[in-house]
Length: 139
Figure 1: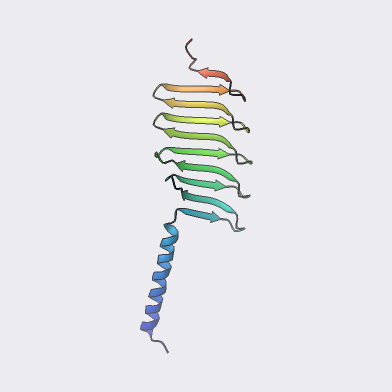
Figure 2: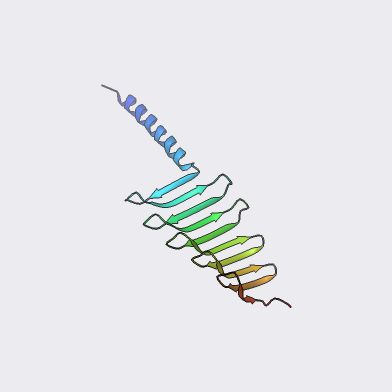
């Protein structure tokens, strides 16, 4: 019959192994979260370019939101449609902030920027033709 001391030593060793396994899991470059049905719903990762991203999926496993920070520490947020195509993008860089609305064909339809030159707003057609640009370009 094992002694209480042996039981405690064995328990302590198992707890230390479990703690090491948990630390290994938490120190990964990628964490995936699945729902009760096994569908991937979220992913937190750092890629080989040292860019960090949180990706959120809908109940079908389709990517719907990406929140990231690139290798230059510039943040971005992208919202995607049912076809996993970017439809709204928000980013910030040393040049300033930018918001873009995109068509289903991935064409920029609205481009709003706020930078050192001040705010800019452009409405574009599907072919990239400028419909309206504010402030107006000087002739």
